[in-house]
Length: 369
Image (cartoon, rainbow, N blue to C red; front, top):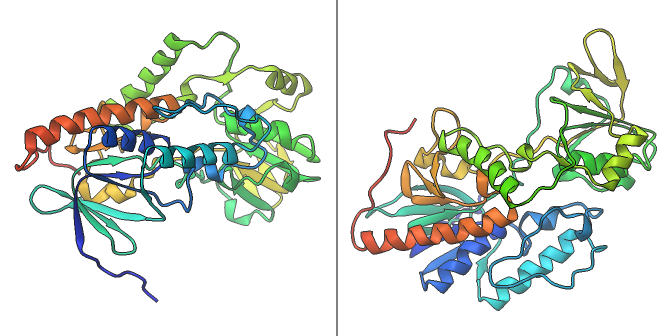
C-alpha cells in the first residue's frame, strides 16, 4: 500500500533538515533572528544520532561533547548511557527555546521550485517552498560497508558500528574488528573482556596521540578537513586527522595486545578472513567500524556535487547554490563545529533574505554534473 498523499505546499523562509547538534544550533539562531522556518527530523524522538548509540557508550566515555548554544549540559551522570543523557538534554533544549520539531519526517528530495524557491518534499507528501535550506542530516543514516572478495560466503555474522549492541552480544565469539578510528578502539577494549578472541585490522597503521591537543591543534585538524571540502572532495571526519587519544585504557590495550593491529585482509572466507601468503583468522563475527558517509542523497536533484564526488562549500554555503547551507558536514562535523556552523549559516541566510527579498536568488557556480 502506498502511503504517499500529496499535500498543499507550505511557504516558509527556511527549512532545517535534521534536529541533531547542527540542526538545533541553526534553528536556535533562526529563532533569535525571528526568521520564519520549519525544523524537521526523521528520528522518532529528540537526541539526533546520539539516541541510537550503544548502551555501553556511557556519557563519561563521550569524547568532546560541547553544549548547544544558550544552554549548558550540567550535572550529567558519567555512568549513564550517552543516548539517555544527550537525548534528554536535546529534548529539554527544544522545549526551553520553543524549537518545534516536526518528527518523524523523512525528506525524500530537495529540488528547484517556482519563484526562485527550493521545494522540500517528504516521503509522506508534505512539501515546503523555502528561500533557503539548512541541511543538517549528518552521517548516521549512511554507514559505510567496504566491499571485499568473498563477503557473501561468510557464514558468521556481520554488523556495523551503527548496529553495535554492546559487548555482551559477543561473549565467547571470535571477533574481527575492522577500522582505525575511535569506535573501533572502544569496541575492541570492551569486546575483548568477553570474547574468545579479537583481531584488529586497519587499512593504515593507527596513529596514537600522546600530546596535548589544544585549540591550535584543533584548528589545524579542521583546516585539513576543510581543504578537502573546498576542493569538492568527499569530506573526511575531523577525528580521522587528529589521531587516537592515548589514554589509560588505550595504553592498557596496547600493553595487553588487544590493540595489536594487523593490516587489512585480502578476502573474506566462509569461516573468517585471509591474507595473501596463507595467513588466516577464523571468526564468528566481523564488526565493521568503518565510519559513515554524509547523508545527502536527497539533495541530488539540485546537482550540487563536484567531479570529486563532494559538495564544494564556501564556509557553510554550497558554492553551486547559495541558498543551500550544509552544517555538520566535513569541517563542522564535530559538536563544537556544528554549533559554530549553525550560527554562521544563519548569518549568511540573513544577508541572502535581505538582498533577495522579492527577487530570484543568484545561483553560484558552473553547470553541475
